Image (cartoon, rainbow, N blue to C red; front, side):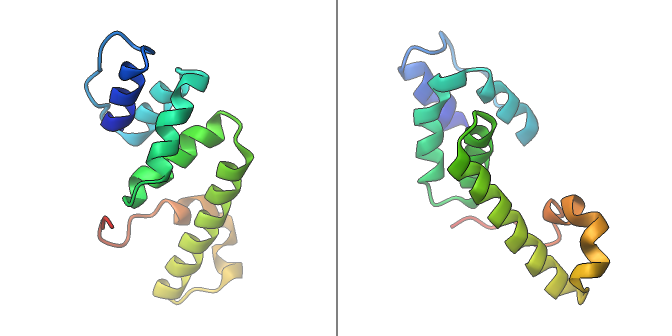
Length: 113
């Protein structure tokens, strides 16, 4: 996200580079405030090799109305849920009420590509 803010600053969208937010939701909300000016930097995030950076880039683009990013997030959530259910030995039916929580459960170690 720091790279995204730096890219926006280079484009003249912000006069200074803010300190990184404490959590991803804050960084996404802050980047959404830039509107269309955030799109090029978020495209760079989506093209990176770091999964979290890719996911956050898609979250911002989806928040700005990008259909492809909204679809990517749905598909990614489905994959995350399927992997979680497999690791926990649960059926799809048992997990239905907890879909959102499962998609965001950090039950595996953080890894970067």
